[in-house]
Image 1 (cartoon, rainbow, N blue to C red):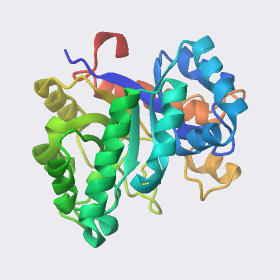
Image 2 (tube, helix red, strand yellow):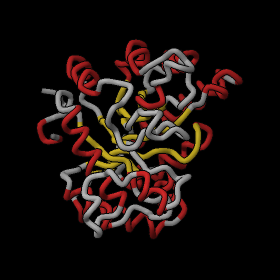
Image 3 (cartoon, rainbow, N blue to C red):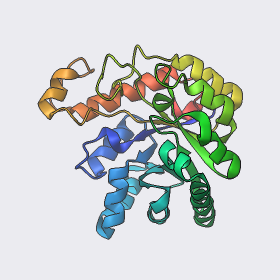
Length: 282
């Protein structure tokens, strides 16, 4: 039995809807106890104090932990993200450090990562960097070697690029598995969503989720596994309804597409990642 905690990114809800009571109440009804705030929700809290206070109160009422926050910027502006996360009681921050930035000015990115780690240490936050969608192992792994306190958010979908980079999540785990504090999981099915490759919802994916769960259990992984599923933003609401008509509860008109999607993915990953999850997360 594993000890990882299941979380859900609020990116599952529409971009123009800041995290609100109905969202958290819905997730709580699914047994979800932790969420990762999307970059849009985090930015909204940063930009407006009333919104920040409302989100904090809403999470308290729903008994949902704000476990992590995705940055709305790169390392160059992450200080504002960390301050906002601290005010909300968020325990972990996710930020990108993209390949082009690393290759153009590696030492500068190391300097920024060290400053990020120092700030997070002062605020009691876990600092993580996430692999982006076109991120080779090098010099990404070299950044972690240069900054020993830096932790990893491993986006499994981003890492699964056998066609273009000759890599999968296994390569990242081999190099940086001991630095992982958060995983982003979502469907990886190019046929399901050929434009972005998000493959929402999961099922018939390019990787074996049970195998990943067993690997994490063997490693004794006890961090977050964050479901980062969302509906393609390039589709209108009507097009989303048509494209995802096979989601469960489709015949229940009072359920929105995000509600049906989140219900499906929570159930899917509880089943497929059960070997890695703590009993209370299953």
